[in-house]
Image 1: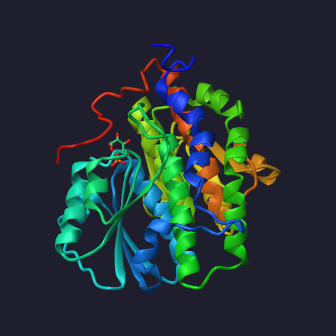
Image 2: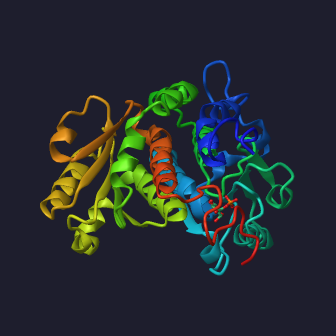
Length: 364
Ligand code: G6P
């Protein structure tokens, strides 16, 4: 009913707008007075010795894991091996004292992810679960659970829970940095900015340009999402959202890979959705945008406020506020979600119940 949706047309849009308070709940109680992460539930796991992380998840949770891989490898001097659960569980699993597994699942009931947890346990490994649903199977079968605290999510396509997964994963990465004695000034500013995220996200959610862009682009049949580094995951999640609820064919590539094949697809009917924040890979993204433009593709860029140069090389721009370069996946998330939501809605589809999809996939 309309009342359940708090005046919103769909659960998905209501849940997207709940993101700032969801993030607040993910942060509360997890930092000390100096802004350093304290995940007491992990203290007994001696994470300082970890040199390898196995990361397993499906769908949107997998994309959150990909963000963690970039973040953790940048600061922690470890390897993060990530795979989708439906592949992970059938591959050989090697664990030792320096390895820990992280399994991410909003519902805590995804069959392939649960089977992956069981396989790791059977091999003698330890599992940290990241889950939203309290009492779900994954929380009972893993060694410890970090809860997302996002509140219930009814829309089938994950939205606020993706952002909360990211918040918990950034927190975990920073906690491990402390344990390993590699906490530094950079992480200190990441942590400060993470505290401000509820406010920053509220601001992002006010951006009316996203819906205007959805109106403009809603009738295209294809999209090419590109990003680099940590925002490769943003591109992949953006394409997944669009496929899931608007049934538009969207592909995602790390932008440097375009020239190895996908650029052949580009023409005026095949727009490029470019994730191009002001980070250390900006110049590389810029040349990928120019290459795409040379094939006459229409370019919609999501860029950092104040970047005037991007306007010159793109047809359209959606701006997000400047944040620490590691944290762009957080401010980009509502943009890709709202873009997909509004396109689905404007095309007359119900984003809460996309065809052929289930909120949690309990079959293999
Ligand atoms: C389903 C949902 C996706 C979700 C995926 C993993 O496919 O439609 O939105 O990302 O499952 O779900 P989980 O609950 O394990 O995070």
